[in-house]
Image 1 (cartoon, one colour):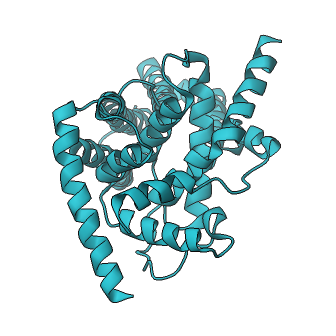
Image 2 (cartoon, chains in turn cyan, blue):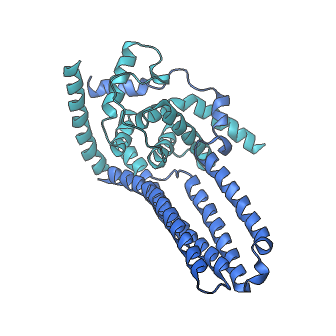
Length: 166
Length: 182
């Protein structure tokens, strides 16, 4: 009975916050198949970790922690390099509005970063404090500051190049 | 697009209609897991094959004509191999920890390194046990040398392939740690 209640709570939370997983899958994987596999792996890991979730941190922080952990330790298949010139066909780009165009630009820029930088910047973009980012990642707050500053200028340069190119 | 627009864009991403609760529920099952489901089937098939080997080796391969130590070594080799398979599966099943990501990756890295050593050792032990069993009571002749050479060759190929797979996994985790820490 307890298990059923727990599962219902879990499903309700994940259904409500699944956008976080979609974003991270899009950030870390290039093909729809790989994204689907990672999504499934993340949901599986979240379910396994759910009994230990004590609500000391917010549901968003907990989901980021487990999802990023999974994305960085998951054994993906080796796939050919992809040229990011078009919108990737998935849930995040089904309709074409100005917001979607911005999202395509955003993901194109973020995909130029390495996996560690992606983790850092995704937490920053979610509006987490340096203290929370440091805690989630397990690095010092000062390191977060230094590295984010480098990543921000890297992103600015990437976006500038794209703006001039378009 | 400036950084504030990036933030806004990130926070709006993923808010479209997503998967249903039923679809998400399906994903909590290990049998439908993209990787673990396949590994579990492989593990079960190997466990059945090894169990069959343990049940029939004495009669089929003339166990009564071999010294007792040869049978004991073979049984130990098979059990060790099965134990290493199980250990590898448990390691790969790895539950993502809610601790810090770097800490969790370090723990996983050590677990993978242990599993690699266990797995490669088990492969060698299993091959040696097969060799000991099939060459027991044989005098050193051409047949003895051929069995030894064939088993050594096959073992080397499997060791190389297995070692490469483990090293790729370990390398990937090390790289993630480096990228987060540097």
